[in-house]
Image 1 (cartoon, one colour):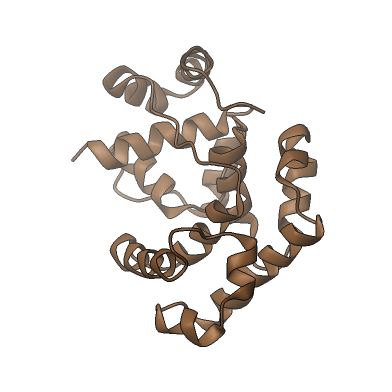
Image 2 (tube, one colour):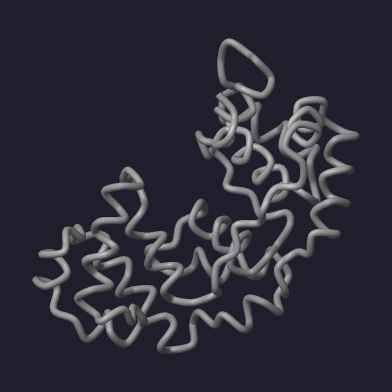
Length: 206
């Protein structure tokens, strides 16, 4: 699956704007968002593991140390060949090291195959990802969206999205996870595009 074209995104945005007044406001103000594209690779998943539950600045520092340790080549083989003590010295927690190694082993054995993910429908691809220890639903959806290009991948429960919707709606409080997820159902099959609209608003508007 290729990443969506500008035409794909424009069509999706127009459909979403017809369905949701808040998304219509975002689209009218900021236009078509840039797609957060990333390679479908171990490197992308490993980076996602590092960034979980950390500030962007802290995660970027740790990732930079890991990349430096591995001479810029973060892949399944280099992670499995690196001593845990060295990764810990970079600031990577033991649970995250276990998760990265579990993902690396899945890639090595073929249990996780990036080319197969690209050919699969979103349900099959999601199932293959979450079957690997260390890849939770949020990470799987982000990977399917950014690295595989699924327009309907959606990280349910993402606080940044809920906050983006609150700000664009000028609401006093954020929707809870359940009502926000129910609202997102009305955005199918373009929930991933809706996510990009909401991130765009949160990152660019006061």
